[in-house]
Length: 277
Image (cartoon, rainbow, N blue to C red; front, top):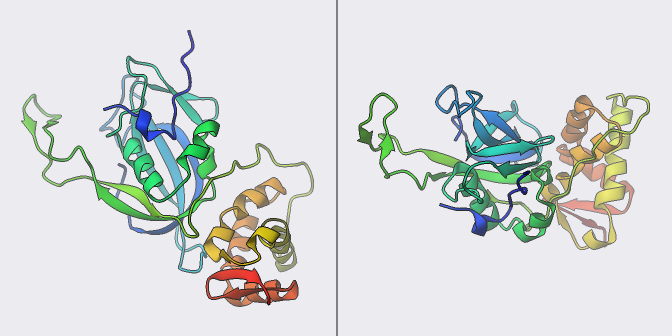
């Protein structure tokens, strides 16, 4: 009998890290559930690792421009779980019916809520892909399990961690509450976009006009918040990763962005995009 999908955005229903991580501003390019063995330290029952949330994080500068290489980070869910379809949801396979609150993933979701991510709105979708494209400040918090007895892998003695583990979490979301939004399931057919300056500027203008320069944002929208849906928009319009990077770079160019906005009656005031008076 198939198990029901577990509620992945409801920390109140949960029962009971990854690698070195630098605090800062990141864009979540992709969030999926995967198997990971943490370099052999968590082989799992099948030897392929335990179920984890895996996020591909693009570091950003203060203006939202891409800097450095993409960072891949993992948050463990546990071994008694099964990944559904394309990695967007999970179900539990053991005796538990809820995600463990003190798992790395449980801590991640708890702090996602504290950062004013709308967990209630996302609970209905129950799709981790809603995090795709989100821009957020990340920091680290102590593992709540630190201080408890931890089993020594080399023998049956018990010991406490010499170096308390810390878990990367979202600490704030520029522009306030984030409700997410899925990326397009597939790219429309058509000629591949070129990444020349004309194509890059055309795609950025199209995104701004259709998604940012709308009536609800007349009084202002934070630049980083406006940037959140850019990659998904380009994907949905047939653009590849090269075009995403080029358009993202142009968006981060304050002078270029300001010129584009002014050409259509809007302006960039500090870090706020708004309609010109």
